[in-house]
Length: 140
Image (cartoon, rainbow, N blue to C red; front, side, top):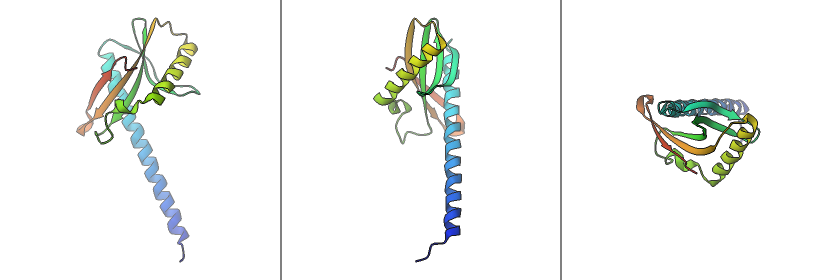
C-alpha cells in the first residue's frame, strides 16, 4: 500500500484551514455573545469596567460595577440548544477558576468593592444574528 504524501500534505492544509475557520467562527460567536451581554447590563445601569481581562491564571469575560458591587460575568454563547444552555457549561471547576481569576483582578486593580457577585450570561444567537440574553445573577 502506497501513501500519497502530497495528498496527505494537502489534507493537513485543508484540516488546518477548517480548524482556523472554526476557531475564528467560535471567536466571532463569543464576541457576539459578549456584545449582547454587555448591552443587557448597560441597559440596566451597570458600568463596564473590563472586558476579556487576562492574567496568568485565566480570563474574565466581563467585569462590571453597580454602586460598590463588582460583578464578574461569565458569558456563554450558543447557536442552538444541542449542547444545552450556556449556563450549564459553568461547572464546579470553572467556578473555582473564575473565583481565582477574580481574586487576582481585585488585587491587581485595587477595586473598592464592598461586594462581589458572580453572574452567568447565557446568550442564544438566533437566525439573523439576533441574540437572546438570560442572566443568572449571583449564580454562585
